[in-house]
Image 1 (cartoon, one colour):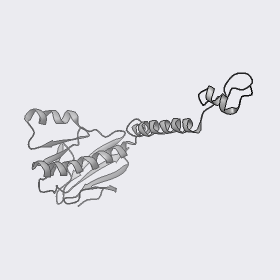
Image 2: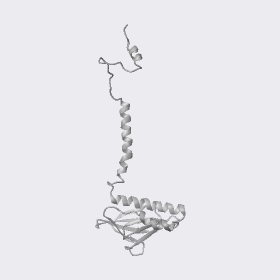
Image 3: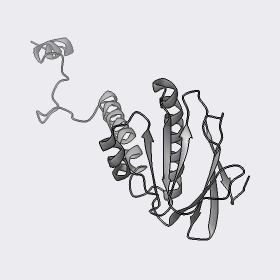
Length: 185
């Protein structure tokens, strides 16, 4: 009795008929390839941004991001908690940290241990307030007040002791301005 394609197809559960050697044709379908490509894309989109925070990051970009994020967070926290928040710049040890008026003594003492240190050859040189001389030795405090404003200040720093840059903290602006050179008030 002659078999038709339908009979072969029905007998094997809808799979194609074997070829002359008895094996099935093998390969990947377009859907399988698309799923694998999608999984690889998801994996890369999760892992590649992690390189940005590692060894490959430029120290100046890291400092800029830290200052920008920290000053914005200090303004917000000062308004929300109704406490003065402070960015402490330690010019002697080339580091910065955050404190606020509601912190307990132990937390205040431990805050410098969690300080941010600029990487590479970046050196914090001085902090200048309007109508005052630049403050170079010791620690300097920039206050963020519950009313939403901050102290006006310029944080001067160098890269390789040759390139000069400034972060300008404005009293009413939420952003910190980055400037080339060392302007003064």
